[in-house]
Length: 411
Image 1 (tube, helix red, strand yellow):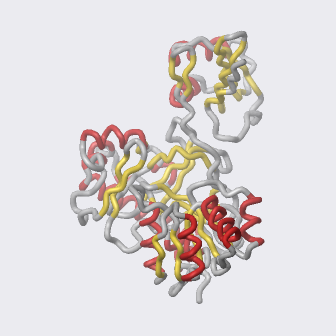
Image 2 (cartoon, helix red, strand yellow):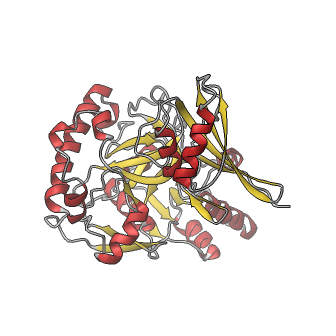
Image 3 (tube, rainbow, N blue to C red):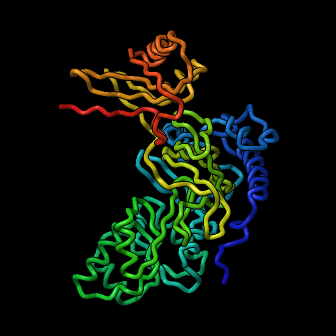
């Protein structure tokens, strides 16, 4: 049996890029003609001119915050579902509220690829502890398991003793759910003297998987891997047996951009994860997830050739309130764009002498004594606040994706 889900996973970079941009061009034409939202936002863009990462990055971002407002005006999905596609079969709800569609399409959210990479195969029995209540997580993995030919115990969350009894009775081959809930189940099994040893593999998501927690599962004979996805997009990236970063799914195109902008960062630099879903039912173009990550160099030792990301590294929404005024990453970006001398910048907010103080630290290779004053004037003009300016050496700012760093500590 193949180690790989399909031949897409081992394509050359050139083959993948060519196929992806063909799909992207087709997707842009599709959404412009069939969705109200993209007919408006992409009306001035010609799909034929999208040939590479640079030309694609000129398209506007689709932000999660925009979905809330648009969905209030255009129920249920804000004009992002095509009028020419099959009718949705489910409506899910996430905090906001944001509503997401589900379709009666095999493995609609594409998580089967991540389960396969974790060792799940046809005939396995899967204990699914993702929630089936409002959110799509339970259904995401349910449909993925079905696509692989696995049977599913739709366990959901809670009822720990019943979870343990079911595992002891039915002896499922693997678990899908959050790391913390599997820990609770296994500890409860120990207390009850129940046998949970049938679980030898686990695909986890939804929260952090610290190395000590992973090591504890491995000691119990559980092969543990994790994946990263969202309710809007489905699978974005997944871990293989190599456990060296998360491999990007073949059904999406991923970019890393500077928070507050749509501009691509340099390779290896931390930024916001932006995803384009290449499926036709619920197509999202340049969807800004709000999550921070970074691309890794090279390819996975497992033989899969798609790019890898480092996993979740924080949130990109760094809006802060200073002296009664909100400051957004977009405003910092506008300040930077006014001054060609600035390579990168980071706005630091501190609490000094019982008052908020902001300092824009700018990487700049310039000896112009007038530059700090000019930048300070831009801060006043754009952010409506007075701030200090500190010129620092190129490359000296941390590579953590932060545009606004709020370090205030109140005594």
